[in-house]
Length: 135
Image 1: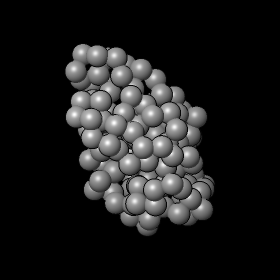
Image 2: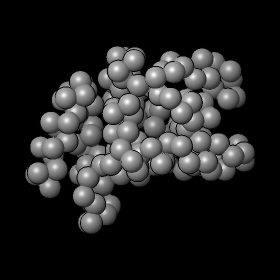
Image 3: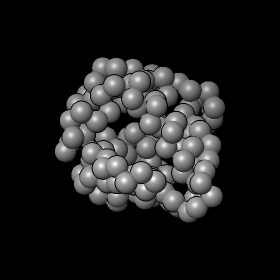
């Protein structure tokens, strides 16, 4: 577990994550381990699968995260319900992304409910954040 925490901190630091988001990722890491004793760490490939997979969302229609955010995280998206433009998710393109934990928690909760019709687990959230940070 200690090894995972050190590895997570190093990788997040290299990606330029804010200290606030680094702390949140540590909290998710602990929660994921508590939820699943065989958990070995967040994985961008799992995060991508969560991000691109299609589900019957809260509106009863098929959707995925890419429905609004597009497949390319460096591009702007558009809210499928309101038509509002969504700035790129990629922190490499949009340095304001994933810098404030309050916003990250709000949007993870809202978007998981919209797409999956449920809140995400700690592992799912960590996997998705790892995927977004790497893109």
